[in-house]
Image 1 (cartoon, rainbow, N blue to C red):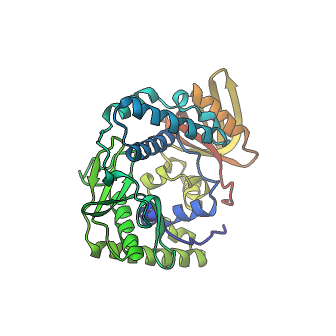
Image 2: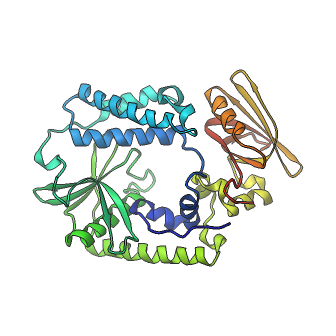
Image 3: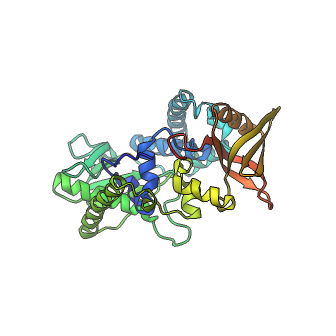
Length: 358
């Protein structure tokens, strides 16, 4: 497997690189080879975009907020319709479970605020939306969602569509805190001053401040540079396995696992090591109305997947596009015997090693 070294690391990928460097390297090496986005990822992206736009426009009431939603959603779904991997999912209201409830919850819980000069895009060189920040080498760089000038100084804001607070620790999720602190370090590197405040904005418009010190921000920037150098050295030396940190939780969320030689190797040795995935050569693929039956064979063992409803159409399209080789079906629900699986809303089928894994 020929991996491509990373040219840079973004603050949004820093924690991912810490957890499993191989995942990030695979994503960069094979940008079109990962699992297709799930319906929940897509609705999360939509909510993020609506929240970001609403924060910029400061709607005064729900009618104005609904107009923003419709405008952003129409544009987003038009983009989805143009891509083969996401076209079957558009429009989202037909493919996302409880889409109307999610939309209504967003509209009902949005925190309205009175527009002020402090919350308008600053047209100076230091402020604005989607502002690119980088160190002098360009090795650490990324786009901050929004940088604003306030009476107390410059504020960096980042929008999140999911939970900002960890449900177990009750603290801000570390990946979000690290991301903003890296932006603060890059801001200092570019403009010779630290921002006065770092804020996360959740899907309701609620602002959560991320406390920081200049020392920890600079320390994270140093660590990011060192991590990038170490990962690229591993890529140059061909140390693929050393770049991986496989755990059931980490691998279960990884969108590059169909290309990962470590993950695929584990399944070959122990198919039960992948709790919600099944792999093998295609034996049969049948459609009965809105029902799909799929049989895969790995070694001498056959495993069956059953699906009902809209996911059957999506799976059938994915299976039809795969020609030869083994197939990895991800995010299915296994029966107790682990020989029969049921498709879920996020089940998908992809070729194993479509980009070089054997």
